[in-house]
Every structure is written in structure tokens, then in C-alpha cells.
Length: 91
Image 1 (tube, rainbow, N blue to C red):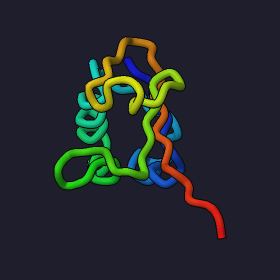
Image 2: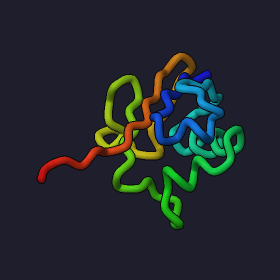
Image 3: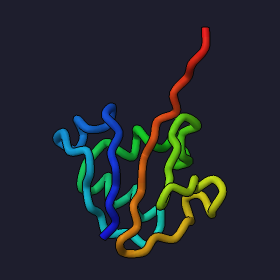
């Protein structure tokens, strides 16, 4: 199982849970299985073409998937995935 850290804005979709466990072999599988368990979450993470939204960052064991294989990044039992919404700042 993969431990997934859910950011506060998405917790209403996971009934308030800050962490969930999902079986998955890749980030793509994880998104699909997460959506099956918590309907609506994929729409918040991916655009209409299925690509990750620009403001969504996903980390596997603290490594940004953009520097790995993106949605094709492999996952192994015991991995920890963090979903982190980008935060805009400035004036």
C-alpha cells in the first residue's frame, strides 16, 4: 500500500482524512485508484485531458515527480506520496 498525504483543500473528498492508503504501481494508477475510493479527487488533480494541473505538485518520498517520470513514476509498497497545491505569493 502507498501512503498518500492529502492537502487540506482536498480533505472534504476524503471525509477529512489527512492520510489515506491506496494500492498503486504508478502515479497514474494512484490517481485512478484514489478517485475510485474518493470520487471527484481526480478532477481536482487533473485537467480534462488527464494531465496534472499546473498548480498541483506530487512528491514520492520527497522527490518531485516532475524530475522523475511524471505520471509514469513507479511506486512500491511503503512509498509515501504527498500532494501539494502550489501556493502563490507576492504583492
